[in-house]
Amino acid sequence: MGRTFAERIETSPVIAAVKDDSGLSACLKSDVEVVFILYGDVCSIQEIVARVRQAGKTAMVHIDLIVGLSAKDASLDYLKDIVHADGVITTKHSLIAHAKEIGLATVLRYFILDSMALVNIEKQQRTGALPDVIEILPGIVAPRVIRRIVAMSRTPVVCGGLIQCREDVMHALGSGASAISTTSSEVWYM
Image 1 (cartoon, rainbow, N blue to C red):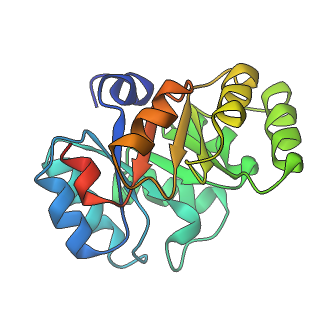
Image 2 (cartoon, rainbow, N blue to C red; image 1 turned 120 degrees about the vertical axis):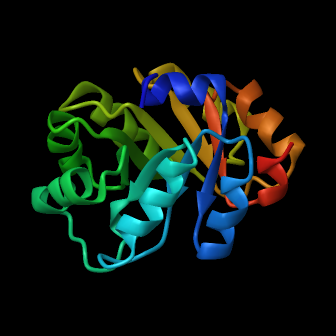
């Protein structure tokens, strides 16, 4: 992978999030360096990851969304040893330690629905293995909320979800996020 995952998102702060084959094909033609893979199953994920890596991009697999995988260490081992993913995205903090142990880059995803989400982020920062980055959704939350999360986090913050235009990207980055993730192909080519 050369540079670390965190270094890649700092130099290329727009991350392509893909949820189908047409999105994958489109992002592979873009200049994005990191791809969040949000679809597939145990039979197709290896080919999806191979296409991303052949394009010279970092392949991050959202383990919670891959049909047939579970929140178990064996699934992480499969993604590392068989699929050859660069990293994993998950909402399950319990997967982070083993993923890091076997050399996968890690993204811990949080849904910012209420103040309890902020409490959970703060707790996670004090206990257990830290992910390489955290991703907050939706990425268009109020600037003060993004700034608060960035201030409490010991890891870079990615804003994802509902980011549709340049203004959304500038809003998130201007509030302290290190990067954004989006399924909007228009944003990949900005």
